[in-house]
Length: 276
Image: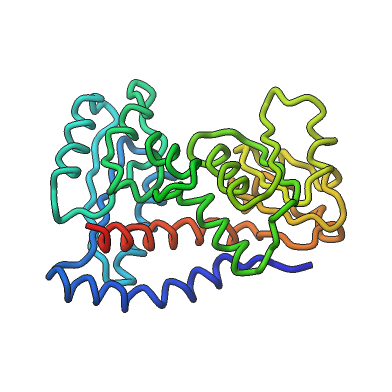
């Protein structure tokens, strides 16, 4: 069984980015810069933001952190996004998900300028990506696609089943797979006979956000297993311990999808700097 080593691949690819950063600095006089916005005090979100900031430092990119308390109004958040949109020194903007419940997250995502939407969260960017036009893809599914391409996982004509339909993971994942000529089924909480559908998959993507929700016994022999979930105890959305004798390839948790997400965010921020 082949391990799709996202950690190892991301480290290799990330090592190539400092040279690109130097070229941007030579051309513009400043380092490509990512702005992160964190609203509230969710510890997991704070950890994710810190990991992204540290990744910027590793490759020589700049980072600006906007930290707002949990009572921040939607209008205040929109004003912060607008200021970053207008700041020529900012190449990418990341609004950490989730935001407090009193804020309309979709409205705030869509306020990010498409040229700075390096996390691929805007409706405009999603639409362009789905139509095969140039856009920054949602970072996690885009990272998965880079991982599959590296390991030469052939998608053309294969049946891919995506379990989860979130706007920043499940839906863009399905569209990217479709654009790669896979036949795609999207499943969700109201899908009938989910085990049978999963059992038809040549490629299964777990993106449902529930620990080990997808059982190893559902997965057919020879399938490629991509687990985009992460939960306490180092487990994902798929019961990976039960697929060892079944899957042709799999992403470990941790060390699979997560590192590819951060690499993709860095690469797309650099792409935005090149296009600016």
